[in-house]
Structures are given as structure tokens and as C-alpha cells.
Length: 231
Image 1 (spheres, rainbow, N blue to C red):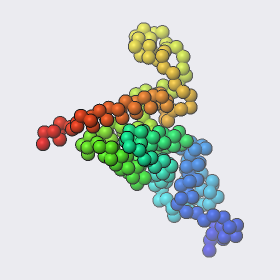
Image 2: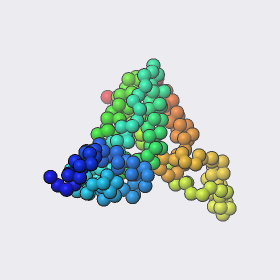
Image 3: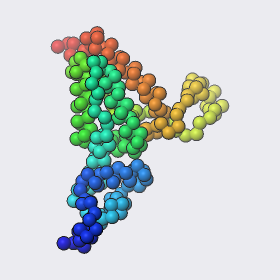
Image 4: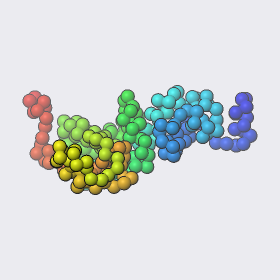
């Protein structure tokens, strides 16, 4: 028995396992930010030697995969309802609440080279909601592309406007009058952003509702893509 094992046995501490490692990593990222997370820092948090972590996660990338899955696992299951739109809307807003609790998670999810098992299961479930709502497989395919990261509760903005607010620079306003006009009318909620930029709650829900209503209109029209229509 190693000294570390003996210490664990003597103190009655909770045995280290993958779930405990992932939960500790998520909590550490919440507290300090994802950039401060390291295997060594996580080992200190768990009061183990760093090598003990590698019995449960092979490397930092596998740790991040597991953290992404742990966060996605917090999203509420879909509610029942006769209309697919509020069901989909409610689940996406649940995903958004989860990502607001873990502001680093959107970046980690985007950084994965492929979808993790929990993300795949979530996306499969969302596709199933569209199909159960009467959308064809063809339309659902394009809906999933159109929704993109919004399915997981966040969106990507053209520019990072998270800097200090205030009147636009007069020289820039004269050169780009329409952008200056939009900037002057914008009102963003502090602390509601997932990631950087102007992705506040109102804007997210505004775009989400436009998309869902548009998909329903296409469904009613029996829309199909040109590729399918040509068959």
C-alpha cells in the first residue's frame, strides 16, 4: 500500500474516482477560470498527488472533454407539450442557464475537436424534438445547422463589444454612421453574457424566437431543400 493510499484509508476520505475528479475540475474552473485550471492545481484541490489523476483522466484534453460532458449533463430534460416550439425553447434556455453558471464552458465546448458523448446525446435528443414536432429529416438537418451553438445556449457575435460603454468616437461615428447609430441605441445587461460580446438574454431570446417561428412556417409549407426537391 502506498503512503497516499494509507493516508486515504486512515482518514476515511472519499475515494478518488472519475466523477469526483470532474466535479472538482468544474468547481475549480467556476472559481478561478478555465485558464487557471491545471492537473497540478486540480491535484492540490483534491489533496492527491498529480499522478493519481491520470488513473481517471488520461490527460488535460480528456479532462476538458469530461468537464464539457458534466456541464451538458446539467441541462434539464425536455418537458412534454403538444407544440414542439415551447419544448425546444425551454430546453435551450435551460442550456443557457447552465452555461451562465459555468461561463468558461462555451469556450471549452467550442474547443473540442469533435462532439463529446454527452454533447452528441444532447444534440440527438434535440434533433428528435424537431422530428417529433413534424419537421422532416431534411428540414431538421438544415435547422440544426441554422441553430448552431444556440442549441447549447450560446451564440457567437461578430465583434466583442464587452468593453467600456459610452458615446462612440466622433471620428468613427462620422465614418460609420449606421454602426454608431446602432451602438447608441444598444442596451446590454451586465453579467448576462455567455462568452464575450453582446449576447445578452433579450438578444438571445429574440433571435431564438425568430428562428423557431421561421422553422414552423417552413414546416407548415412542407419545405424541402433544392437537393431533396430535385429527386
